[in-house]
Image (cartoon, rainbow, N blue to C red; front, side, top):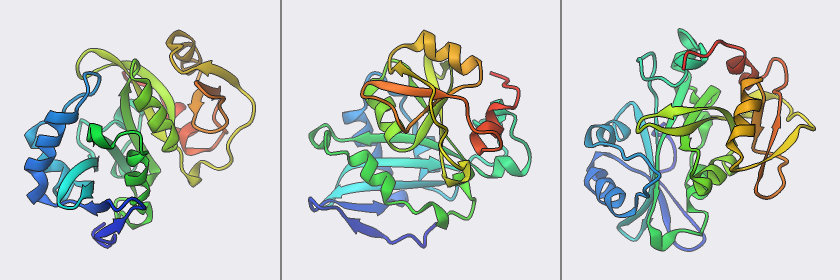
Length: 237
């Protein structure tokens, strides 16, 4: 993963760079300043992991000031893998990646900085092949984060209480390995959680493509796709 270019420059002069362990205190400080009340904070140990060999953290820099970051973790076969509740086993678990933390300085919000940091990462360079099974959780009452994750190519696949007891969506990253995007389906309001829960219990997913503003397009996954593969397994939680 270290083959990725060390820095890329955005149109407004910000730099997007892979961060190493020397950025731990800056990440902690930005989180303390910018985390919202609907986000789950990462601990000091998790920050160290995000910056270590099991993680990848990309930062947005204004000069030498950290103004945003997002982090990936490669859990492997550990019991905290989000692939386990979807029935993934053995080598499949080695291909799981968690989207762990995304924070943007309030002064730089509204510039789609999160999406730009995501675009700075070339998934083909990850030796763990995490692009096969990418997971993230977002609180169901956090529409900005839900919209952002959908815009980054994630699909809603399940919702359940997690971490702090709040209901959280588990979203799965749709990739070219998922084949064609299915047509049709039902438009569901982004905050209509009861209807979303009903459709997800039937095996439908909320697709990131083709929805009208303020809605998510729910439709069954195509047979044989990666997302169909995980939704066909028996969930354990």
